[in-house]
Length: 238
Image 1 (cartoon, helix red, strand yellow):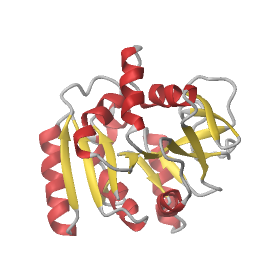
Image 2: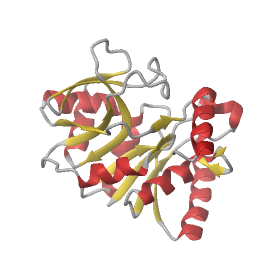
Image 3: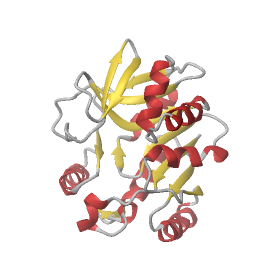
Image 4: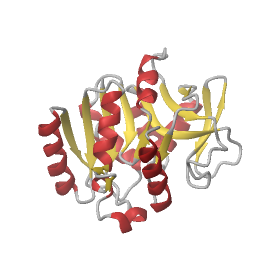
């Protein structure tokens, strides 16, 4: 199965750690290389990476990873990288003609999340988001994560500022072609984000939730989260 990694943005909040977020070393290994390594442990054997900001530099680094680790990495260029992340996903459509996983270049997750999501039963014509119902965990900032309202295995609403929620978006999705239909619909309505597409799918009753059941994940989006990720890696529990 292919895994799409969105890595086109500027990553300004981690600028003190490095100029290009996906290549910032965390415990000696670039962030995106850790994402790829964890996804491979979770059963992924091929990657599509969307680059934008300082894309030549990122693509060169990934080509070196591909050669060294013997893993296939296909590049997609997003020249509109200042727009929201759904634009990156839609630009990868020509490379993805079968079910695929989607994740972010700055989300470190337990490989078992990938493995369990792939193995879980899925309904044709839907998109499934891995969600964390442990909303009181100190690991991820509740003021920064994307919030999700779930009911009976379905996603009803998703967004950064929604007030009625019972889960967090881990940034790991199992997608099919309907995701691209939803992205096009959402962008036509003026919302370029992946969350916008998920809200479209929710209205179509095609957005599903997968409970990660307490498995760990961290969005390495700022220096505080970076420190938490380092601590998890140091502890050997992650």
